[in-house]
Structure formats: C-alpha cells, structure tokens
Amino acid sequence: MTVIRLSTSLFLSLLLAACGGGGGGDSSSSIGSAEAEMPGGLSAQAELGRQIFQDRSLSGSGRMACATCHDPAFGHASPFATPVVFGGPNLDQSGLRNAPSLRYLRYNTAFQFAADGTPTGGFFWDGRANSLHEQAREPFLNPSEMANSDVAGVVAKLAAASYAPQFRAVFGDGIFASPDAAFDRMTFALERFQLEAPEFAPFSSKYDAFLAGRATLTAQEMNGLALFNRTDKGNCAGCHSSTRPANAPGPLFTDFTYDNLGVPRNAGIAANNDPAFNDLGLCGPTRTELAGRTDLCGAFKVPSLRNVALRKHFFHNGAFDSLQQVIRFYVRRDTDPQLWYGVDALGTVTPYDDLPPSMRANVNTTEVPYNRRPGEAPALTDSEIADVAAFLGTLTDGYAP
Ligand code: HEC
Ligand code: HEC
Image (tube, rainbow, N blue to C red; front, side):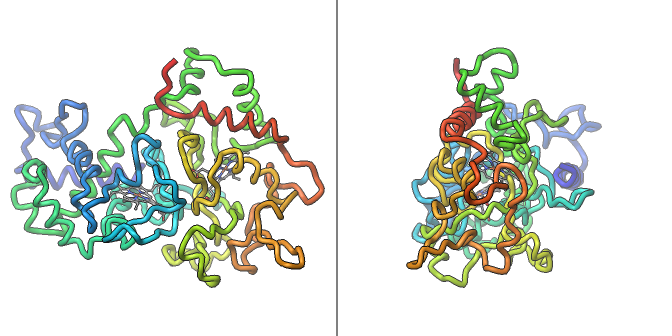
C-alpha cells in the first residue's frame, strides 16, 4: 500500500502543477478537481480506468480487453475452459499461466521480504510488479495477451477511443503528444479503477453475511470452516488467512506470501512440450534479482480463495479443474503420488514433476496438510474434502439470501 499511496500523491502533485495548482471552485487546498467524484462514486481517473479495462480496441487483435481474461462474472478471473488464455494478434498464442482473480488486491503490498525473511506481496504469480500501476503496463505489450508492438501503438489506439476527450480533460490537452506520459496515465487509471471500484472488493459473500450475523451456514459448511482452520486437519488458514486484517472489513483468505506446492506439470500448456522448460516462479527469468535464491524456485503467490468456486482452473498453471481435486491433491500429494504425477513403464513415479530434479527439495513437505508420507492417512477424508469445498462455496461474492 505504501508504494501505491506514494505514486498517487506524487501523481496528484504533478497533476496539480500541470493544472496551475487549482482545483475546481474553492477547494484548492484539497486535492482538487482531479479527485472530483463521478456519478458512480469513482474519481475521474478511475472512471476512465473502467472504460479502458473493457476496451478491446486497445489490443493487437482488436478483440481482447483486460475484462476478457478478468471477467467480472467469474470473480474477475478467467472465464475460459482452457487452463491458460490464448491471446496475441490472432488469439492463438498460448500464455504460460492461469489468469488470476483481480479481487481484493487493493489489500496487497509491494514485494518485500518480511522481518522473518518470508517473501510477501507483489503482483502476478511471481510478484514481479510492485503495484497495480506497474502491473498494468505488461498485458498491453505481452505477445500472448493484448500484443501491441510498442507503447506508441497502444497510445495511438487510446487517442482514437470514444473516451479520448475525457482522457484529455483529466490528464491535459497535450497528453497524447507524449506516448510515454499517456501510457503512464492510462495504466494509472487502471490502477485507480481497481483500487476504487466497489466490485473489486465487495465483501458480499455468504460467509461475510454469516460473520455479520445475517446468514447461517449449513452443518456441512460449518464443518468445512472448522476443518479449514484446524491446524491438525486442513490448516488452510495457515496461508489463506481466515482472520480479518486491520486494514480490511473482512478476512482476505490470503496472507500474500509465497509457497512451493509441487503442483503437477500441465501438459495443456504449449511451453511444457519442451522438457527443458520449467516455470520457476519466484526465481524465474522475470525475477532476475532473485536468481541466486534457488531456495525460492517453484514458489508462487498464495491467491485469495474468495470467489474460488467460480474458477474453472486452479493454481498458477491451471493444472486442476475442480475444487475437490485441488483439496484432494493437498492431502494426498505425498500419500498417493501416483495419483498426480507421471508413472513410467516400470511403475516409478516422479513426484513434483514440474520442477527440475535439483529443485524438488524446495517443495513444502513439512506443513499440514501436506506433511504425510506414503502409507499414512491423508489429513482429510473424502467427506471432509467435500465439506471444505462446500465452505469455499460460501466465499463467492454476490450472495442473496
Ligand atoms: C490474455 C489474458 C489476459 C489479459 C488480456 C489481461 N490479463 Fe491480467 N493476467 C493474466 C494472467 C495469465 C496473469 C498471471 C500472469 C503471471 O502471473 O505471470 C494476469 C495477472 C494480472 C494481475 C496480477 C494479479 C495478482 O494476483 O497479482 C493483474 C492485477 C492483472 N492481470 C490485471 C490486468 C489488466 C489491468 C489488464 C488489462 C490491461 C489485464 N490484466 C489483461 C491474463 C490476462
Ligand atoms: C503453506 C501455505 C498453504 C496452505 C497451508 C494451503 N495453501 Fe492453498 N495455496 C497456496 C499457494 C502458494 C497456492 C498457489 C500455488 C500455485 O499455484 O503454485 C495455493 C492455491 C490454492 C488454490 C487455487 C486457487 C486459485 O485461484 O487457483 C486453492 C483452491 C487452495 N489453495 C485451497 C487450499 C485449501 C482448501 C487448503 C487447506 C486444505 C490450502 N489451500 C492450504 C498456499 C497454501
């Protein structure tokens, strides 16, 4: 949050300078007209961000917007049946990762190591962006996403959009003369939209209603909640925190840290046809500054479990397509590895097959629920798995009793 606030106030002072320091009317001592609320309750920048978020014309294909992969009807995550979305100029380029939900990210921070050394915060599965502002630059230029060839190309499309006059009114008449400045303001508007618009953090699930005393959970959901929290059973809350942090109106079901789960390789991702390719997460090529931290290879960010029941694919590589399977994987990963990983002709299983052999020791095998060895009983029975899945179903926003 620090970084986000800093960039906001920095921007506002620049903007005020550009406008001659004056806000509208007599409010020049406050943050000025730039923060004037639009009818929807959003700032003018966020309102522009809303339009940009939905604008397909800003892509190389002319058919892809942020909302294409981050669909509001799916918790602002991927609505597609494939584990990764196909983008690019002809919508035939396969990406490497599953499109995550954009909800509740306003409570995330820049990437940092906590006092005890735990990697925390950052945006993307590998935390490589330090703010939503920084994050928003990438999709426009990513060859398997919106696939523009350069910043100037994106800004030319922006200058031709129906809301370009509004963009000029907010960011200055001459804004399009500098593609870099216009691109920076455009990505800033996307950040404001995600930070301000209530739909990105509605806290309107059945579980929120339950916490407020306005709904009751079924016996199965209550049991699932208990198993989710119990440190000797699911222990899910160990990373997907179920307590309310000081800065949020409800629990977020993530602590924004990282972990290495040993998620199986997904043959459905084109890049995985190359046996030499591995997505290494925190120590991968997008995190060169962490290249020396081989202990972090294979770690990915803990996602919020809010709206998780709406997801069609789970984990950074979309390797699973049902919630029950995911929970079963957690508790049977090491008791029954043959269920998840490739078995060769001799019947030998290769656990953690999506990591190079030298990095397989990084997989977390000490924490409940994945601290079991072959032959031991899984931390949850099949009916308990169903209970946890039922509880996760109460985390979907938009509950109407
Ligand atoms: C082709 C599909 C696609 C499009 C279009 C797309 N995204 Fe994404 N988005 C993804 C994928 C895949 C990831 C995860 C990539 C990674 O972690 O390396 C992601 C990650 C993100 C994240 C990080 C979430 C987190 O948990 O840290 C944000 C924020 C985001 N996108 C916002 C946007 C915005 C804003 C746009 C439009 C400018 C956009 N996306 C366009 C697929 C897409
Ligand atoms: C030690 C930390 C930790 C614990 C404990 C943990 N998780 Fe996770 N969870 C993660 C991480 C990290 C990811 C992302 C991993 C990846 O994609 O490689 C994740 C991903 C998930 C996802 C996929 C979400 C998505 O959007 O793709 C689900 C569902 C999930 N966890 C449920 C659970 C449940 C249920 C439990 C308890 C049985 C649990 N987790 C326990 C760290 C944890």
